[in-house]
Length: 235
Image 1 (tube, one colour):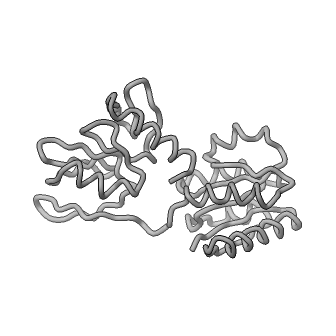
Image 2 (cartoon, rainbow, N blue to C red):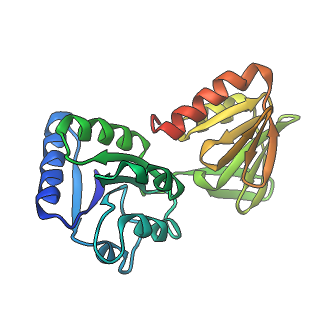
Image 3 (cartoon, rainbow, N blue to C red):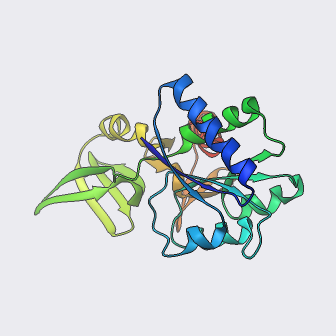
């Protein structure tokens, strides 16, 4: 089940979005828990990262949707934000606050459902995805989202994470099979990169967190394809 917030001050538009969500559920055999807010201030009050997706109007009295998204991003980097707007020129700033897409008013079901499908593919469950590392002095439970990249050296896997570096025995093939489902991709023979932490690609290198890694000629095309699909919401 996906938890979706609808933030829309226009009653007619809010009802229409809810009806489109109901229709999409029936047609695609998915289930939504929908929470409706009539103003950005309501969702910002004691905000917690509970939502998989936020469908938010931009032009609202008080705090507009763009400023609300900026505040949400300070505590929630993962929620998928889709703006509902009649002002397409907001698009550039929208991407600055991590908006994935825009639905332009007046809304049609085809346009809405197409963008909703993309957003659902991008959305991640709030349940943490964890792996267990068998270390020399014990075991370590590690959330996948904390991993920047994995490096293989002499049959040892080095996990570079937000908590530090952890080394375990293993092969690149084994870690690739385990992490590909979580949007990781090889940039060369030695590195498996978490695409969510990629901030820049510069010629033959990729910036991952505070690290800069080489992209090999052999892996360049599939790596960039994986990154493009991830950013575009196909994973």
